[in-house]
Length: 409
Image (cartoon, rainbow, N blue to C red; front, side):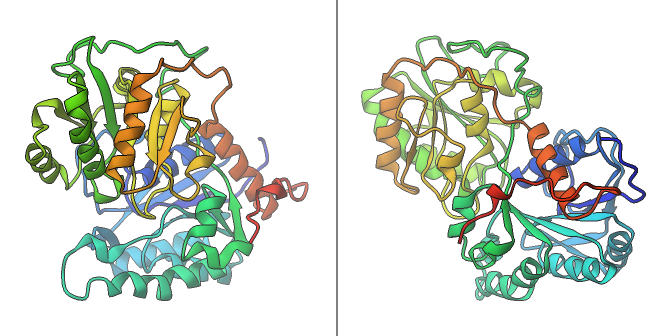
């Protein structure tokens, strides 16, 4: 793309690239690819719940961190940060904000509309702010956030992007704004997975202590993700405990960090499976493909509306590894559910997860996929097409976005 764009695309992300959550992986990877076609500026905050993580690559995009403090595990901008954000919005060519960003998104939408700047909101999840704490009355925070920030922002946005139509229709928040919703499914990073040609078949034996205590005869289940309640790790631990008597070679490897690690280690011990469950901590990008290909099944039985499709399952499927996920709204749009390449289970059901794991572990590994997986480059191209439709590019040729990706109400 060679259009001259005099002002940047302003991308607003609540947390910095050192926070390796799904929203941040999505936002920064798309921004990196957008920057190859147009000027991009990123605004985020100083709140950093996971310092010392390897950051998501951003390829030198200018990133400004606005002063903020933490409230219910989310950033709350200071007055100085709010003033700087307002000035940036008014000087942008187009604003892309990743939700949820409590009590900021409504202001950004208002500022953008006042300045005549197109504003796109990418809606990642139904935030449960009260669930971050266990204090009396904490539950009212989520209801207040939705009423005072989320709904006004969604009502005023130029366009709202959702990862899946199923999630948009089922969301108690997003379902009220379907007339503004476009679907742009997620992608994967081929380079991170080492995919440069046909995907090799068969299970890979790990090297250099990646899976401690592993033996070739083991049946390996791998979980990848932040150790937070909505990822469903307690359900997976319960399922592993049910399967152990009949599968003595069963092993579970848990990759990721988060506030629930100690609780999950105690839970594994209480279930009598501590000796077959290994917590690996953070696994760097350059070993992710090896980790996934070392598994017999990659499992992430998410619960609740904070996630519909785990990125690790989409990446595992691209590598030809069987997957197990939860049958949440929208999950079947990107995760296999054919009983061979993968299965989706009722969320929060350890018995269903155990039976699905048993089925997947008992059958031959599927052939690697022959089709090219969807990538972040594809995602970025669809965003650029949407931005052109909104009049971002000078001399644009009119709407270029596929109208078929609108969500029918």
